[in-house]
Length: 289
Image 1 (cartoon, rainbow, N blue to C red):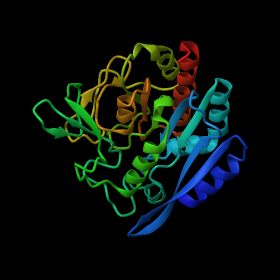
Image 2 (tube, one colour; image 1 turned 90 degrees about the vertical axis):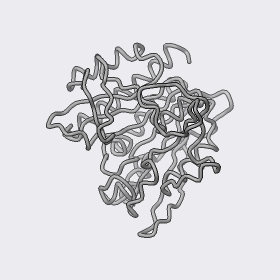
Image 3 (tube, rainbow, N blue to C red; image 1 turned 180 degrees about the vertical axis):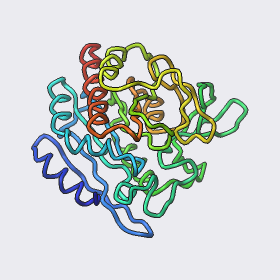
Image 4 (cartoon, rainbow, N blue to C red; image 1 turned 45 degrees about the horizontal axis):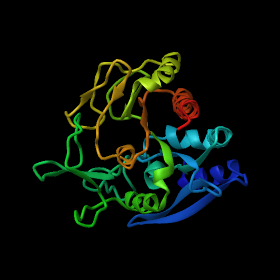
């Protein structure tokens, strides 16, 4: 699907008065693309926000298509439960259109395009990934000028937009992915998360009713032999400098990366994404976060 067609359908679907859709431009050597941000109108200083991102990797289409097909239901459910939304529905439009992992210029930067954090270790070394650990001296945005890190254009833009967003009001950050790298022939789900994982048990129960979960399994997912093992519920805790990792560092309580295998039929991937989104909204309501 062309990115322009995706956006046209999204505009037609989200024909409502309680949101604002802003359009930005991405200029590449090999073409120009629009970049959209969807947000609730009139976000006040005390409002709680759920933030969604999708499509950072171009071949991972289930996240953007979930928002296209179910965006109204997601916004309605958030509103009914007292939440505002900020949605970045297609982070990498040129990759989405070309069905390639990175952008139309094949620019993956220094650490991929999901690159948002740098960690200073106690010995002064700067890294982008703590692997399974959580020990460091200080963290920084990877766009901090002191590092002079080369970021892809879509990542640069998202950094600029996020720095203007009311991040202190974001109570949940959900990144919709689709693992097309890990070699498997089965439909399955797993998840990256931080903090208290037991709070998601009821979500795991729902997921298990529709497809298997990768439990106690080494999952490579492009880490070049540096895989981490998922736990008994399919969770991986990895501070890898990604967008959810950034959101966790700025204080967001619920930070999840949703993964389904590339062999998972789209209709099941949509269901997994929605179970997570609606389930986390339910948790926020229950906990009155």
